[in-house]
Image (cartoon, rainbow, N blue to C red; front, side):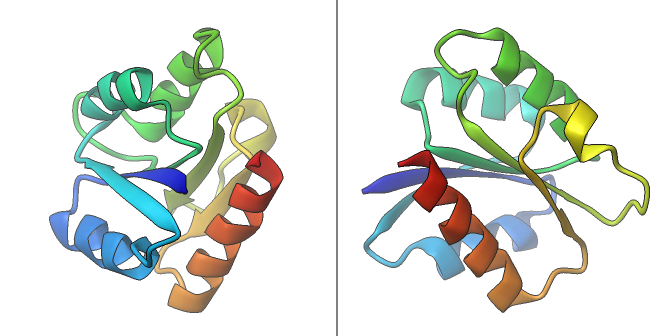
Length: 119
């Protein structure tokens, strides 16, 4: 079973994505900011982190940087979510950007595609 860590400061978004992904094939962990997510990622070592960019305490770009610096989490797949139009995904260390507002089908397909490459 794959593990996905969903990170967003909007509780409704976290709940929606969790419900979409929790299908018996994926175990879903949640966090509401990058600092909490970093702690969970280091403890649980998820296969994929799906994170918003703009959050309090620590945003998704900083979270990605910390994950890349840690030998235990450096190979974790990171997908960013953002409504921002100008995000340099390549420089961030993430594998992809999902634009908000997102299409539910596209989001689920993108997560599963990247989980397949993480296996």
